[in-house]
Image 1 (cartoon, rainbow, N blue to C red):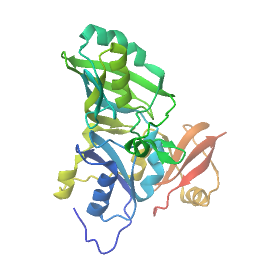
Image 2 (image 1 turned 180 degrees about the horizontal axis):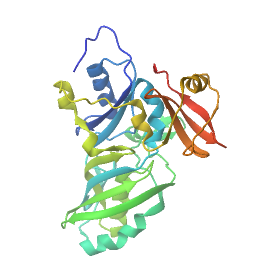
Image 3 (image 1 turned 60 degrees about the vertical axis):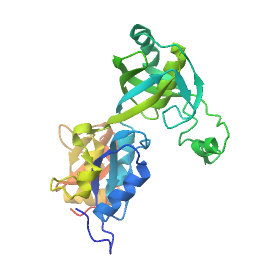
Image 4 (image 1 turned 135 degrees about the horizontal axis):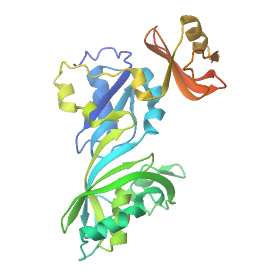
Length: 299
């Protein structure tokens, strides 16, 4: 599948990568750019090196749809080891506190409702959040203690899958900005036994599911299966309206168009397509589509 590296190409679409453990998200993007010989690419949400699973990577014009993917629901499967807390809230960090206590499954189940809904969550010290222009993880690596304020996050579901005295496996569905490592840390503290993440796998990001993903090794071996998804795949279930070439040209110029047809939305968000090609995405105001992002794709 790798193309010659002489000249980078315009590549547009999505690849749903199954990121392996040990690889940074930035490195994954760089590898895929080389594989597809692409000019431009970016990911839709950082996945820690310790984690595996879905890392959606957008190429070219698809990068304009990244915010829609990032705003979507995420799903994770993760293991929490009890008895120790680390400075990174996962097994990559150094132990900062320990406990001889171990929770019973009933104790865990009794506390899970505390993590459902809109909750206040303090991000891990080792996170990409900026403080006065610097990343929290850079401050933490320099020996400082980043002062991170709690912020509201939404957790739709948190289920206990299995448990033993020393660890438990969970599945979570959550919204943008939620840190699974913080869930493990806070649950361990509430239980009084402390805890940190030892394994983490992301199984969904917005419209992209685990079944959609492909391994890096398969990409590098040049598998024949089509892996590049269309640009509009990042828009998920957003309302699609079909427009003619004249309307498409107006949208390309940044002009609003009146949506026609019985199923045309009157408000909300939608994207327009012409000849099977996505033209623009934007807000619908009183039956008019106001383009927010215009895609430079031939149609």
